Length: 143
Image (cartoon, rainbow, N blue to C red; front, side, top):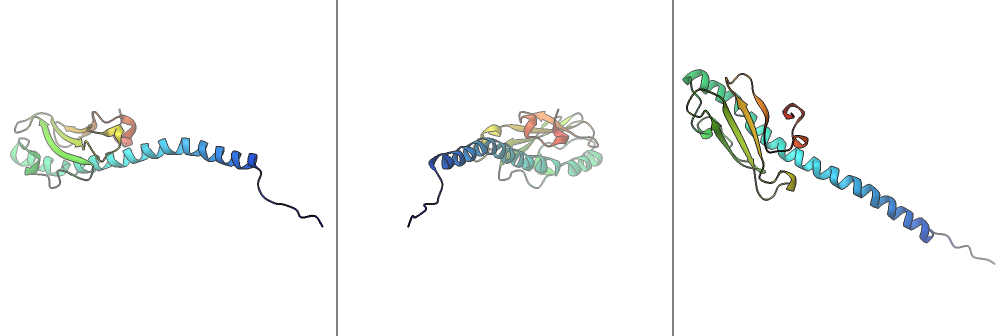
C-alpha cells in the first residue's frame, strides 16, 4: 500500500513568509505614527487644560499670569517634560502655552519638540505653532 504525504511545500511556506514580511513593512511605520500622535495628544490635553484658568486670570486681573503654575495644575506628564508660558507673560498681548516633549521615552519623530497654544484674548486659541510636525497633531491643530 502507498502512503500519501501531506503538508506544505517549501515554495508555499516562502510565499506565506513573504506576505507576512510585506504586511509588517507597512504596519510598523503606521503603528509608529499612531504612537507619536497619541503622545502628542497628551501635550494637547495638558495645554488645553490651561485655557479656562488662563482666560479667567486675564478676565480678573487684566493681564496674563507670569508663570503657568499660578493657574495650571499639571505641568508635566508621561511624555511632556514641562508646560511653560511665553510671550506676553505678566502683561497684555499674545500669550503662548508651550508644551515641551521629553527627550527620552517618546517616539523619535517628536523627541524634544514643542507644541504651542496661543491666544491674544483668552477666548480664541490656536495650536498650530511649535516644532511638532503637523502629521502628528490633531486635525484642529494642523496648518
